[in-house]
Length: 257
Ligand code: ZN
Image 1 (cartoon, rainbow, N blue to C red):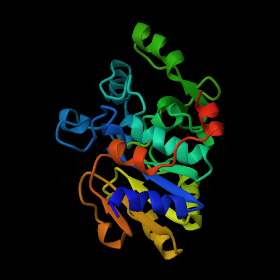
Image 2: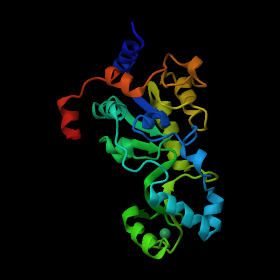
Image 3: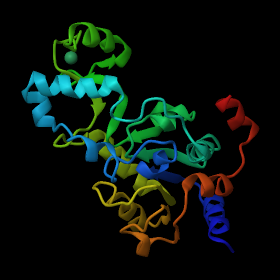
């Protein structure tokens, strides 16, 4: 049996899959991995959360990067890997997708927002750091371009920031707890495009394994947890997943359309 056929079998046998995605699934949509050579952080220093809070200059630089597209995800579209994951969710195989990515491509592939657990937040909108009110980037762009300032929160006058988790900024405990609970409850933990080095990515597959789930990993490079996995495939996600995920049912096709 080929590795892809084995993955297809594991998916067929599973009843409650958690899909865990990292930068590797989005590099296939042309989004450079932040950490890789040539990635965003090799060209410009990330702005730490404390610096963002401390000075207007840092905040303006962060927003300049957001609106100039310097961060690199502007205009990207979901690829065959994202669409295969969306089929798993639409077909009822996967309950949630846990992702390290901030590009919103799982939602763009048709997965409902409440089924995507974004560990590092989302770059597609902003939130107030004080009251949590959501602000749309389109509403912030004009004042920033014309006056050079991002307006304070319309609700509480707090500081508004893209809804991503920056260096030095704690992950949201409620989001982490959801990710842990889903990992504990699944029967197949499917890793797509993560090297599983950064916490909590490193911990979630272990939670799943300890609760009796199988572990499958599809990643270009070896990961820290290959030795623990039931199946490891070192290949492109967009090549593997369309063959391993079951074909769309009429119901899932209608949802996507
Ligand atoms: Zn506010």
